[in-house]
Figure: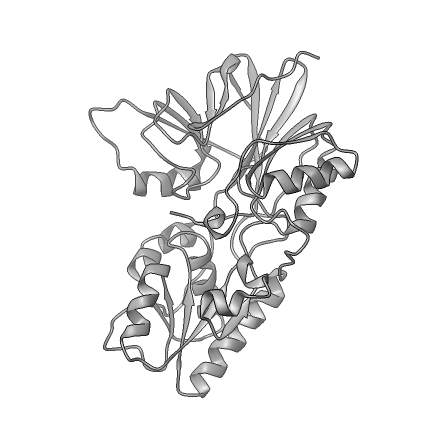
Length: 333
């Protein structure tokens, strides 16, 4: 079996035989974008393969430039296409709306690149399918056994209960979310429960993309500093400091994988900890690896050294390809 040649570089993952980059950090001739977070969807590439939802978000962040010729190539889940002698197929990943894994069939080998991924069904988004493969490239943001996250239903109940309790105490519950992904999940959860919700502009800007995907946000309002009483607030991390200094009576909820840490309250300064993430926890990562049947695993992002070592202890041929330890690994940019 010849297999697929893979180069791990500071600019991204490169498949030189088929001239394709996976989530490159700089503009390239041809790129696969797994999802539209700012640390994965970067640069005006010549040819961009991604799901239609991801391309919509990507275009919002990277408007077309007449001086840069570009072709956007939307793909559908489970419908293969040919590229430079390889057969490529996208499969769902439960990270954010539009997120996808990529199966590359070339040289008699099946290679899967997960991008950011989780296994449990998300509050908003498609549910991951574990794809059988010979070689797997998987992210490991939370690749340590200390990380255990809530399932979708429990997370929903905790978010709603937190909001209602704060409001009954005369406080404004503040949920901090990234502009794309968890922000919309929290807003959708609150609005669906009938809780008046005020939304920061950076998060509100991406709501239409989720509405097109079939998720409703009944009754949300744009954030206005003079109209917060009796409402849940969903804001970005940078806006939180403004609220804390504003003198408003607030209660902060930390909805994050990092909320699973024993020192999360001290680290975050939040009164409510809700360990829900758009990344897989440790058990989910192991299940994805084992379910894939991969004979070779490359671990990228997060706790790569530790997770690769754990996989090797389980008899899996695994290698660390570099990562960023700590909370920055989950940052969305």
